[in-house]
Image 1 (tube, one colour):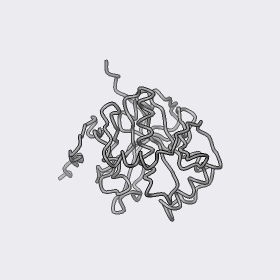
Image 2 (cartoon, one colour):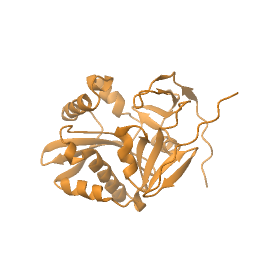
Image 3 (cartoon, one colour):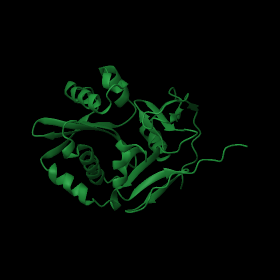
Image 4 (tube, helix red, strand yellow):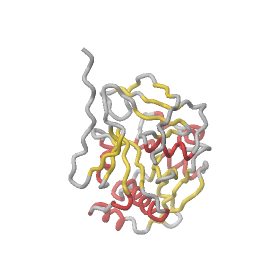
Length: 251
């Protein structure tokens, strides 16, 4: 039996410059931050295209653009491609170490190096410990910091929420000077393996943006399900992911 429709207080943010597409402006719908939240409720919201930043739950709602699409991998149907198998071989010495979601100086130093390399000049590159906590940790969600280590060396951290029907990749940061290791791709593959161990059907990857180079890797994982026009649509190998049509302007 389907769940009844959710009726929650929503707010619309003011337009601001888009962080991913420099020619666009972004707006988001977000849940009233004073409303009690839980893993069960958040799991339903993720299935409807929402995501969290800290304790703030939001969904893109841009009037002139529909490129931010929530995507997930159906774990049981995923088959690694050749490039994925290469990544696994190149990182055979890595191990995944689940840890609780809390501030650690070792994690934060790596986060600072990563954001300074990936987001130079942006607000994330100048994060303080309080900003880091507010971005990644909330008290109502079952969150884990999945370390990937080579021996004792910390190579990366995948911040991951456990939902009722899957894992949700919140944010991943790793050694920025090791691009040839494809550590971001390895993190997704490791999370897929963890989903299998936990018998969870989906890995939620957040938003895919066709014209943002940093997001294109998500489309390499097939089949991929895309939340578009209030339903999940599946795209297999070789399928072009179609963007939802914008409504005709009022005349």
